[in-house]
Amino acid sequence: MATGNLAGKILRRFIAPGLLAKDVRRLVIDLRTDVIRLYAAYHQKRKTPGRVFRIRRRNCRMWLPISYGETVAQRRFGTYEPWTFDTLDRIVRPGFIVVELGTCDGAFTIHLSRLVGPTGRVYGFEPFPKYFEIAERNVSLNALGNVRLLNQAVTSSAISSVEFSVESISPYSGV
Image 1 (tube, rainbow, N blue to C red):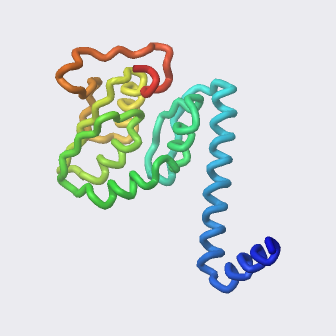
Image 2 (cartoon, rainbow, N blue to C red):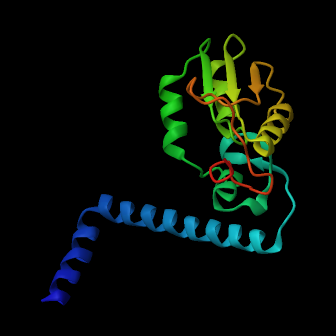
């Protein structure tokens, strides 16, 4: 019974080439994800120092602390949150004024800067000191004159201060 189902599934994929193409795309995405995960683990173990990378998929350059983990490796290969980049492409227009809360290393900041163009502005807030320095470096590397970075947290008025762990490499666990 199971063999018949498997043979039927395979046959359907050859009859409907769209299904086969979808399978191949999924396989390629899964393989790329696994390779990036291995790359990140290798550099975390080695404690590889950060450096400037050319991010071809995003058409920019970024200084990245490559030993910080998988999400940094995803940024290095331009595969970090593609759906967010697609959404920004659909809604942000030249001349917009954009406020970005949690700039992190500046990947979205760079993209937003290009989308709003020379007549627009991007205000990026990044309270985590380590990532603020990285964002500043990346804004400078890409000569983004329409970006203003602020090393401040945006919170409710009930919160008077935010403290960070100096040793932490993650803005999420460092608060």
